[in-house]
Length: 136
Image (cartoon, rainbow, N blue to C red):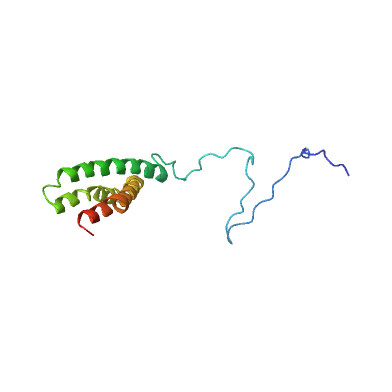
């Protein structure tokens, strides 16, 4: 019995066995035409996504959240003499921006980043400052 050298195929090549049918009555699936061919997009598959991934959107959203919180803080300081309710209301504008951005799938990551920064600003800076101003 002749044994071919390592890595060599027999003269006739290797015949892949047919795969069993997926369910009774289905046609048997034959071997692929070229098992080493690079796989490309298959017909019926979803096209590649364009735009930012969710993680990149969160990164962009954190930058937008920082900028919007700075603008809200400047608006707060400008409106501080008008009344406390109006001034604190200006600090909720980035929260409203973040919630509105959550409605659309393409801007959901950006809205998440804005809400992360808004929540951090309220927990770390705004909440304790308002508490100290009101004597709590």
